[in-house]
Image (cartoon, rainbow, N blue to C red):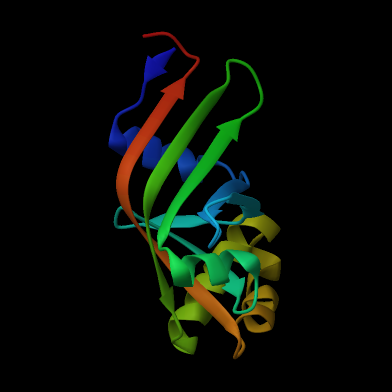
Length: 141
């Protein structure tokens, strides 16, 4: 396996619309893992979530998160991101990111409709400020 640089790892996160697995910490210390759709810009990861979800409640208590994205097809690869989550309540930013993320996962033709549907009061934008990245590719040097 080949270690990916930080730039290669961030590129891997967005080269295909793979679902990220988000890990948060419950108030009692137990982990909570759920799938999320993501996008990356400026060395930060973005996703959206409803304000009453377990993951948002966890991030309100403890902003530490981890994300894992993997390629399940040989030669296999993965990227682990550890960082701190910031909850953003601004509807304009939310609409921009909800539309952009929807375009990645649902296609450009459905991006606007998903963006409008997801950019409503109660939905939040989450920005992850990355502290650490670990990524490997199964492709040899």
